[in-house]
Image 1: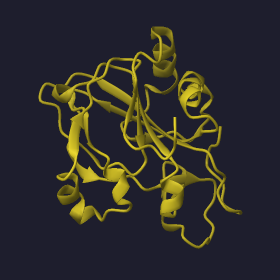
Image 2: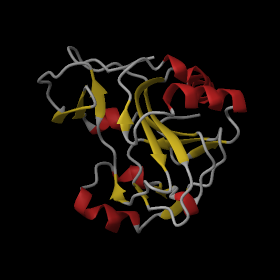
Image 3: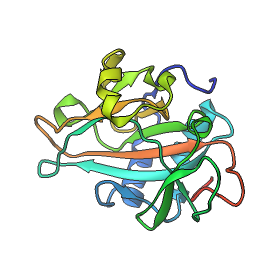
Image 4: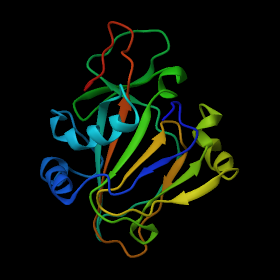
Length: 211
């Protein structure tokens, strides 16, 4: 497939039951919103599915999410524009530095973000009732969108709520506007968010993970 993506891509039944169970064992016990700073070696099955469609890409950041009956939340329309790097360096175009989950994060130039993939790996079945994410399809074409105007811009695009089975994978352009509602009838909904990239960062910057 071509990159940058023009729209979202679903890989239905991309992972067999055993692969999903392996991912739950490796990452499913992470706290909600936990940025995984250790090895990403457990993502082999996910990487195989992604690189079969997008050659040359490698995982560069992993965040684990889990909604339950006791933990369900609302997140307004927004873009995710941060990357995880090994160390902080003063490089032109790399701004908004923060240190979260034992990792340095920053906002890179749009040229970097536009070439990245925002991947959702479903470890449980997911729907609107359990707080599935809503996306504004095609909104990545806007480039950088200020947080205060994200809702206004999202209204101009077709909306889609995640409807997935365990083992499905959703691939999005990195700059896609998205939101998440609290589940109306929340059961456990575990999802791994994996960001993929295919180019190295300008020295001395380096991805926290690459491959």
